[in-house]
Image 1: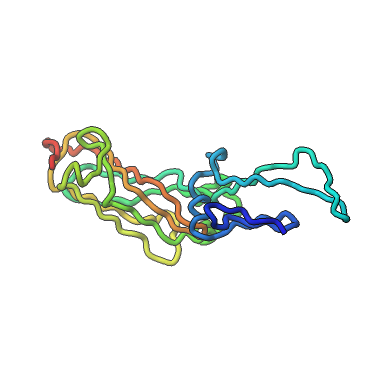
Image 2: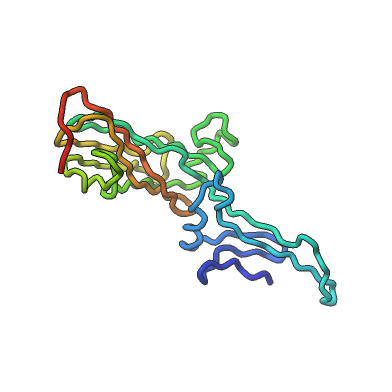
Length: 220
């Protein structure tokens, strides 16, 4: 029998004597699978496999170049995540995400492979979550936690409803500024996308454009 591939005593994958590799769905394995995109091929989860051969009576057969790598490529990625506001007392904007599968097809591209297939359902994309409590910003310089820079800006994410995520419906973000600001600035919000093969982590980049009304810089 071929021994499983382990990581910290947990099974990551198994391989049959016929060479069929099966990825495990335990939490540790899925974290490793989703750590890097296919564009970062050198860093994706990799297993080194050695081929051993023997005669029918058990005598070993020397095989040259008998080791090779098996790459585990995560099925989907988020290539872009953004929202945009013009600084105001309160405004709501859609969250924009660009989903691609492992071979680079945009989920919404009409020319993608198997265009009649709903990729969101196929990959079972079920949830989008934004961690607004841990948002960071370059307002007033640097990149610091928003809540530590000012208490006057509030963010609220409204997630999409339904069993599966639908194209173009990625939820909305409400921006509420109880103070005033000068100049453009950026807010970065950690985001997680749940699908059949675990959780993708990314950042939603929120661009806030200067209000047309003259104002002073927000302070704590």
